[in-house]
Image (cartoon, rainbow, N blue to C red; front, side, top):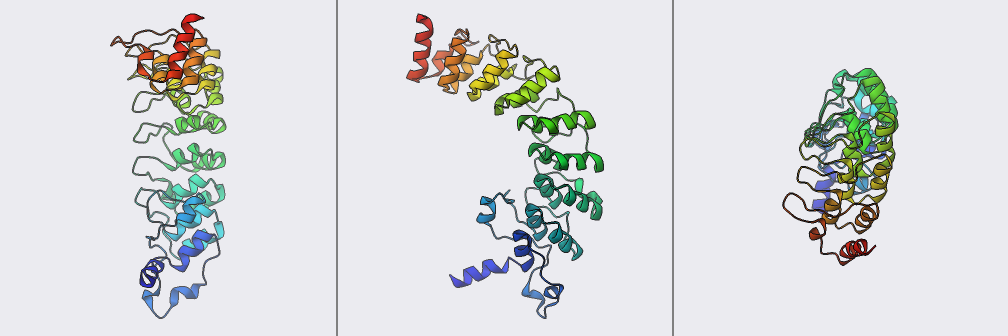
Length: 321
């Protein structure tokens, strides 16, 4: 047992520990020890899985981390500078394709991003294994100042897409970061109607995540059609909201003029998707709002998609009222 613990400790150099804890780097003499094998280079990735760090919101995307990556999660510019000055490589990636600049973009400190771009101008030219750029990540996490730096100093395409077809604008919208979305529109000329790999637009993504104010922003300020359909499925935002059981989002969409009777490519209404998701409150609200059950393209009624006694009671009650 003791040998096993010692083996684990060997993978954590003083630089890993200092980077992870956001402390100043060990003195330069640490790199000049008589035994070269005493410590691994500061660019070495650690195999140690730090559960405590993950629980505290540290970098835990399943890959090995360098000391520089750890320091970036702690947003300690002094440690980052010391590591870089002693040879840390900002371009190294973990197994998911994230480099230190990508991590720093998620954390959102503009001074760290500017420093990394100064010492390594190519650091922004990176993608994760699923095609996500630092701009995607900063937009998703609502890091407005970080997005400003990325737009000013990097050359990302306005509608760069990850492997799911998502753009940074769509990321900002689906996470409710309207200020970031507005910045991407004004300074990056992002496309409001860009589609993901399934043909869904930003309004559909916002309906899935229940971002009511983002939906209001799209429809009321940008003029997005509240009933615009996903290209491949013909689903509307109302369908997506009902599928997830977001009653307040369904209510918001209807208040913005959404067609409650809209049908998708399979002739399903929002009621079909709410029933399939077993969302009692959503089914009840749709019925109370005037939506009536109807057969889809296969002849299946919405109420046939559930065995929930509570949902079936909603249909029985709607017939009698």
